[in-house]
Length: 528
Image (cartoon, rainbow, N blue to C red):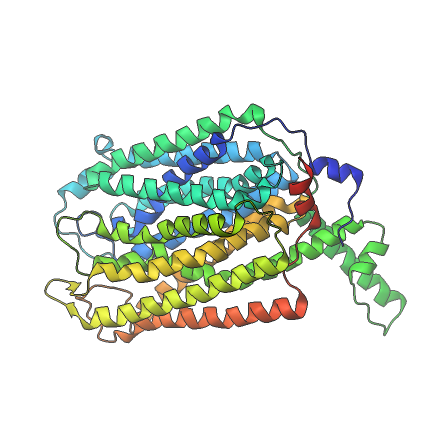
């Protein structure tokens, strides 16, 4: 299906310079540590009684907003790196924006700047805010989150592809994403633990963000140090521009055909556009791949909606459960069960199945990984819904906590970690191995865009509750007596995911939805 020219193969296999092995993992680890130190603690920090006192719905909305902007912005920078500038330049630009956002965060949270912290330190009993913008420091926090999200979007859509491009030896590319996910989640664990123990009160946020900015700067410096070793693949015409030209050409051909032969119907298919002389076989194949990728990542949106619950609603459950005395930041520790499970799972799979074996990424392998991950995500939501039902039944309005132990949160977080071992890894593998040369970063960005769309859907669902008889508040002092809405929220998401699980399975069987680009496999195996 994919026809390869000599010129295109040359672009796919640039001259190798030999990047030092420790640099890629360390730069990813430091950058993700800075990223997750903010993301994993965002909801619990904003809603904590000892800090900002944001409402549960506003805290979750801020988390969804951050994730949404970060993932949606990824597509813009993916198009830039695929069709305009080299990936290294785009990543460097993202680092600059990223660092500017953290510098802004440091300035806002520094008590000596008198921006926000002094007013909070003098406030003893903040009144509940009627809107998000009325929450304490919201006018400063929301712009800071937006800037950081834009910078992280530029990096996350390109860093994975850029790293895979550097592994042009033996069969390293086929196992690159295992290492990438381990580095990402290790950075997340380090960043989350570090900042959760640093940020004891509102004034210590300045120190926490300073440390995170230092990690980000370290990642940027490592990226710059390795610049001379990188394999730089020049951008070519992006598939987005090709799709636009194709649609315009198809419409013109259809209009001309109807004008010449009234009463006849023109299909306007790929053959018509190809016969116009404006599109090569490679361009047509790129468009077909892009169309399939749009459908694949659209079907993954319910899964990513469940994935977003780890940093949004799961911490809110933990804030109102019994916590053991003497254990600080226990909510954060429960969330870390997810990345720890993912790392252990990837390590076991590598040692048992991949070690000393030549792994070939086939459509069937990736499809099965997706299905296993989706099914485990359904189980995780059923566990979360069941936990929420019994948590509400054991609530004590006097203490604003349930007698249920917070350790019960481990079940749903571990199950999601197991799910990510399969589905998240498969999403990276598909985004890279199914992508044509003209859309490598774009395909990877579609993965993040799906996560972003899921975030916006999640924020929309949360904001629906205050407009009805329900309030998305996990507090035991909630005035609303219709507690079933909370656990039904999880059950509904699980049901939607199961429906999409069936659709995903049927689509592959009927339409061969997942298809690997042979050039990507050849590229990983040809440079020995």
